[in-house]
Image 1 (tube, helix red, strand yellow):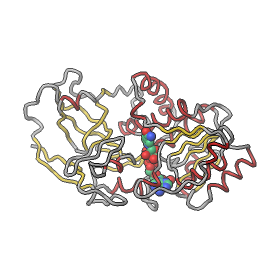
Image 2 (cartoon, rainbow, N blue to C red):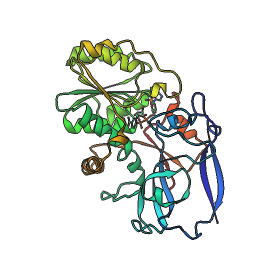
Image 3 (cartoon, rainbow, N blue to C red):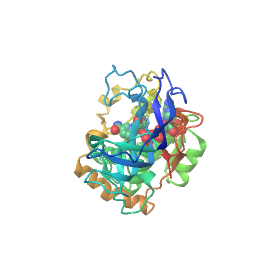
Image 4 (tube, helix red, strand yellow):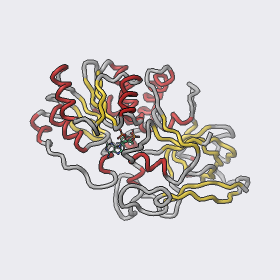
Length: 346
Ligand SMILES: NC(=O)c1ccc[n+]([C@@H]2O[C@H](COP(=O)([O-])OP(=O)(O)OC[C@H]3O[C@@H](n4cnc5c(N)ncnc54)[C@H](OP(=O)(O)O)[C@@H]3O)[C@@H](O)[C@H]2O)c1
């Protein structure tokens, strides 16, 4: 028997998630050597991703949304990487690293239907496992889709990205530079803004808490001509300012709205600019677009850029499971994750 740590969905939060209450760590004795059913695998978890959308899964099951609600009292799950300890699934062998939806648990026995949804991580570039759930996982794929399929960013564009120090922001900035586009980026602390300037070579980085987004954008436009694209991770007042200042014919990739994930949304006032400036404002859920062709293009293009440093990666790594403190940090305005939030078991 092995003492396996798990993180369970313990209670539905009414605002921000509360560590130890919303999520709770438990320990269970599990026999990892018990006979396996056909198609099952036993994994040792290597890493798990914390993503802001998980807050939306911590809701009453009766409320409809684009992703299923977590079940109260059950282990939560999200993207992760695990090493195969035992396999009765012909696709996988001992020692393979598998990527996909894993339980928040130190070890896991997955039945055939869940094992079949996993893929073997090739990792030709020999990068750390954590990267494959962040800049090289779902968030990175979101950034690539936003730039390539929604905003059609090209040389000559100026791209404004909000929430810029998260994984979506990081890959957005790296790809913009590879394309020859200029960048404006916002984040919520002086340290993050300095990092955006020094490491991501952002043309105009600012702290949205201490500077007025409208003033920053107006100044940029006056000196450089209007910015042409918004990669919107946050919504709220920064989106309102962007609608006012974006160029005629500008494109907005609506990715997320983290300012409202724990409460009511800010009321956007400048919606008429979509009409007046003939803007293209398009949202998407990346999981609905990840065909084998899309994934192949992403894995051909982006891991080499990460491996050669063209896309710098900053991670906020938590060692092992906590009581949800590292998840609550995603929404903590004073002490938020500085980089991609990930749990590592290595
Ligand atoms: N559409 C899709 O398919 C898709 C896929 C992936 C992600 N997303 C969305 O994309 C966005 C970015 O994802 P990510 O993984 O890169 O997340 P992330 O940046 O790691 O998200 C956490 C960060 O959000 C910022 N934040 C938290 N509360 C905020 C608030 N009230 N106002 C402004 N900023 C706030 C904080 O940064 P600061 O310190 O800078 O405030 C925090 O560090 C999220 O909205 C996410 O839900 C959508």
